[in-house]
Length: 258
Image 1 (cartoon, rainbow, N blue to C red):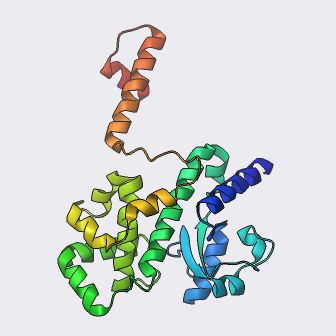
Image 2 (cartoon, helix red, strand yellow):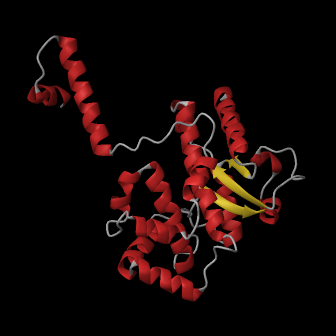
Image 3 (cartoon, rainbow, N blue to C red):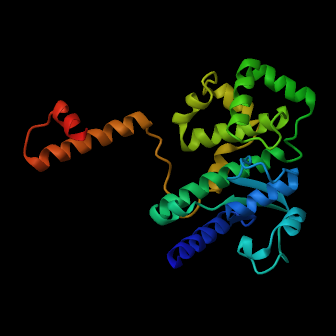
């Protein structure tokens, strides 16, 4: 337990250094805020967007306590806060600190994009939204909207405005941290310069990516999962073969693996 607390404190320190408006909190704090802000009934178990939230100072003061944000008081609370869900107990117990920092970085990156996309200068009127969807493709957008709703990324499931903003945040999060997931989540969506420009809407995504990086967090491994798994398989097979002093055999390896 003491080691877990030490790890959380190290993550909070690194997060605060990256963004003074961001706070690492337990999942229950974010769940409570979602229930209160969006008037979600207590019987609803699966809540949306619990990995991070953009929350106003007023809502923080009403629905949270300073020590839940690692603070002594709310005296210097910023007008808008980013609440980042801390890693789960299993992750805290078994993941190296560097990997935990990368996870928090990823969530901070997403939350920062949410904040930028929700800002007044980025808020789109209905006409602009329709033009954006038309340029993006109605079929592609409807597919993405369905995925985001199903995967619990939308606090207002039927909101096209929120779906449009969240699509941008999820798209760039995956593109920078796990690009293999893009064709799986959005099979109709092409990862092209035109799509990126349309979703970014003038935002400097690279700047946000660099500014949200936690000190000591490793760069994402952008090698494909298939290539990574194949490399791991070859390495394991080679080590197995060398350890018992026999030549490599795919059939023998698979037989022993079974």
